[in-house]
Amino acid sequence: MSVLDEFEWRGMVSEATDGLREALAAGPLTAYIGFDPTASSLHAGSLLTVMGLARLQRFGHAPIAIVGGGTGMIGDPSGKSQERVLLSREQIDANVAGIRAQLERFLDFDAGPRAARIVNNADWLGTVDVLSFLRDVGKHFTVGYMLQKESVSRRLASDEGISYTEFSYLVLQAYDFLQLFDRHGCVLQMGGSDQWGNITAGIELIRKVRGRKAHGLVWPLMKNASGTKFGKTESGTIWLDAARTSPFRFYQFWLNTDDQDVVAYLRFFTWLDQARIAELEHASVEAPAAREAQRALAREVTGMVHGAAELARAERASAVLFGGSIKEAAAEDLLLVFEDVPSKAMSRQAFERSSVAAAAVETGLAASKGEAARLIRQGGVYLNGERVTDQRRLLTMADTIGGVLAVLQKGARERRLLRIEGD
Image (cartoon, one colour):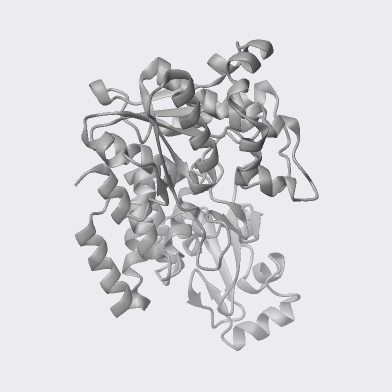
């Protein structure tokens, strides 16, 4: 199986240039993908692009990741309805450094002839002068050609319009492809289908200036079953950076994948082979409630992005969330599970002087001690997952988990954390 066969069965070919299969079969080639440095971390949607480069490398080809320190100062209009807020050079440099560190987890930079490279297009875009660029590059692009590109025409039809700054992005990206062709023998650019116009512009520039054939391959843009943009949730973007999206939240994002999407995501985002994915697809159809496919997806992607230790921690925490024993859980796992649950800090002395009813009032679980007592009599209050039956029940350190917290609960869902701090 060739890398193109691999991309095809995984559903990662939307369009490709004629002759690409033959070029890939002729021997190792060099390919690149660009990454937009609008943030210091990649996100879940970027992972498909990263996996594209990593798969290419596993089949013996050499990947280049461009972190667009130059084009990032302008912004790609593709897929955007409004012009981006332009970042400062300092912000872009910081973002480039963050993205570079993340890419190094996925690509092998010591693989001999197929070793990966990370380059910054600011290295050449930051030194070229305007007149030279217009004379040597701009003259090869007619305005009519640029207006035909979907990213440009759609913006022209909008109320927002498009500035000359963003209009020039296509030419700058084409110049990137030419530079990589000259510097590293790069003959293939890949990306999402919204990049097809930019990619073909680069192919045309190489043909006109160097008289050589270059190639492009794009995959479909990611959307979930509801039609919304992949990698977004109600609480925001799912980042690869653990400081922005905790490994537990990251794991939960994949675990919550819709049944309609899970098989496609297994193809896109994991290294699992056809046979294993077929097994998981069968399991998803035969026993959807077991969510075996979702668990495999969450396990594979979280382990790949955050490592085995964080995966194990996320799985332990997830077990608590889905009915595991709170009393037997580690305090650090509970803090992950109940990260968004309102909490109340108490000293050890204050905790041991309190009752369950008083703590329920203190944490806002009940409006008054009378209401708390009534809830306890009705069996509606739980301490660390166990029902409280005595409305006069006092708290002791034996009621804590790891000596640092306790979980109060009203009904099926409403919870509060008691954090024990100090003496």
